[in-house]
Structures are given as C-alpha cells and as structure tokens.
Length: 202
Image (cartoon, rainbow, N blue to C red; front, side, top):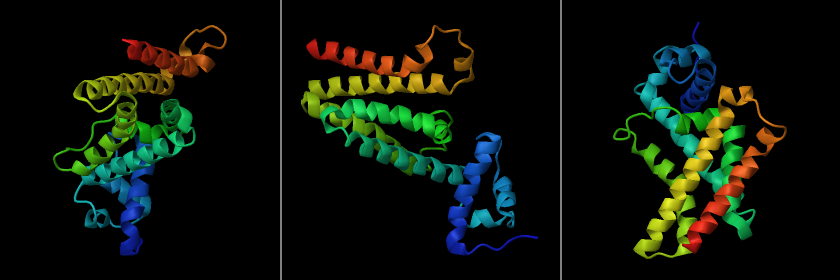
C-alpha cells in the first residue's frame, strides 16, 4: 500500500531517496520507480516535481556543487595567510569524506547542460573560487588572467587526479614503500606549491 507524503515534503524526500538509491545501485542503474519504492509511494508521485530521471539527477548534482563550493570557501577562510593551500586541502577532504557527491560531480555524465543550466552555473562557481584567488595574486591584465587560469587548471587537474586515485580500488593493491600511501597527498600538495613557485619566477 502506497504512503502519502505531504506535497511540501515530497520534493525533498525524492532527492534524499534518489541519493540513497544511487549509493546502493550506482548512478547508471537507478530509476524513478526505485525512488518511489524506497519511499513506498505511488510510482507516479515523484513525477509531480521531476518530469524525468535527468531532472532529479540534475537537482542532486546542483546541490552537490553548491555544497562543494561552500565547503571550499569556508575552509579557505580559516587560513587566510595561505588561502590557496587551505583550498587544496579542503578539496581533498571533501573528495575523501563525500565520495558519492564527488563522483556525481566529476565522475559521471551530467544531464544535458542545455536543459539544466543551473548545474553549469554552480559547477563554474566552484572553479571560480580558485580562479579569482589566483587572479588576485597575479593581477587582472589579460596576460595575468591567462596565467591565473592556466595555474587553476593545473591545480584542479592535479588534485582531481590524486582524489580519483585515492578512491580507486587499485590504490589498495599497489606495493609501496612504508609511508608512501599515507604521505602521498601531502607530497602532491607540496609539489603543486613548488610548481607554482617556479611558474611565478618565469
């Protein structure tokens, strides 16, 4: 027998249930019917707020990016004397403590951006936090802005690579010297810092 959920709560219930279903079954295998079953409601009920599966997924991904950007922004302000390092550490912390959200943002195909522009809006905001910090460091001229954006792409790709490796199964099967796995993240952050210092001298 189907449950009845207050209309004001139905949207939030569907979002939460979808996240749970995705965590259990993976982003490729879930369906709107799975969400309805999880909530024990009519199969048609979720469609009152989300026309299809992609609309519900877009809402989840959008919220992940909002949470991600807020987390980076908050943590970077804790260490204003080294905001860039704090932002990098926050990035890695978020990826390791919220692996599902991280995979949804960066490891799965997004719903059509033309239909769901709000996803792009919040995804770009997260990157802009990094870009704007580097522009403040280098300056606002076209040449300096380009340098800042290249550094932002380098930092992002380096952090994403480490975060992805940490989440992969292969990490647990590498035969490494004592301490390497524990120190890899800090070493990568150090090398990013050295690379940026070298770039600033050029």
